[in-house]
Length: 139
Image 1 (cartoon, helix red, strand yellow):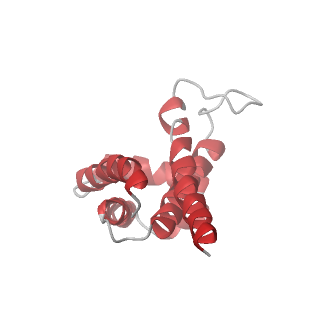
Image 2 (cartoon, rainbow, N blue to C red):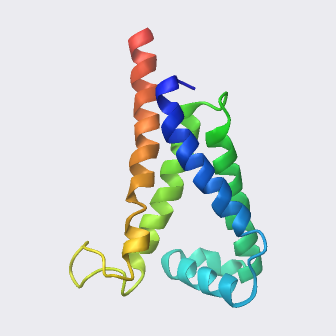
């Protein structure tokens, strides 16, 4: 890990690790609500029940957070993971009714908490692109 990647990776990694750990015991109505929103964006997730989805989401966030915090994990790979996770949230934002103003990308008040996650895609792509640029400069 480059020293310049450390602030980005530590701050986002700690956030993801905390988020994943807090979802470990998610069940009941909370798990069903989260699963229902996800199914609206990605219908294939209907194959999982709400408890399975909550466990998968929790473990994914823990794994991504731990990878971001691990200094020897390549920034290129953790950047890809972060960008992919962020892209999933963007799909949720774009496909869930009521999160955007009609015929616009501008979020409604309800959509702001998810719309703000565009930064995850940007941060992930920054790690990927910086890794690719750094490799080319050394060649």
